[in-house]
Image (tube, rainbow, N blue to C red):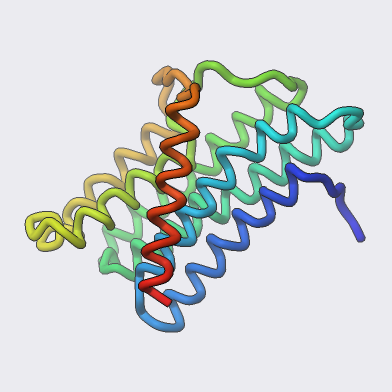
Amino acid sequence: MLGFWNKSVYITYLGAFWAVFGLLMFLKTDNVDFAFLGMILAAVCDMFDGKVARNLENRSEQEKDFGVQIDSLADIVAFIVVPAITIYKIGLNEVYHLVLLSFYVIAGIIRLAYFNVCMSNKNEAIKTYLGLPVPVAVLIYGLVWLCAKFIPFVYNNEILIYTILVPVVGYLHISKIKIKKFTGNWFYAAVTILAFIALILGIFVL
């Protein structure tokens, strides 16, 4: 088969799979929970594929380059296209909404392309991000989704909240704001808790 195959890209592929599968299930059933659960699981996978890749030994330069490229391509799908379609289906379907969602997609693509150019020859962990990483957008949108389930104010104003968030998040993707990378055992504990919540909600959804 074409491509390079190792533990890190398996995790990347799994994340893209969950995002696309969740979106398709949403389109099939009109249950938006599927889309957000898929994106959250994709974000969890994205948090670990880079760490796994850096711990792999004897990777060729082609394998490293492939890992960078496939990670960004998967991110375009899981954290840019899938959220845009999901939010559109939620109710942001006026013409000005389409403009905002299109801006969000373009901004995310620009960020990932810039990231690839700057990081293609590096193998060390990143300590500071320039601009908002695209997976964080899913966590922001996912937080709104969760709050809408339990907080009436958020539920009644969900479309307005997304209308504000989409251009703001898109701008942050291409801004020069510096964001320190979240690290430490507490971070991985938080990721584990997030995955557990997604799993429990997924059981109820299914």
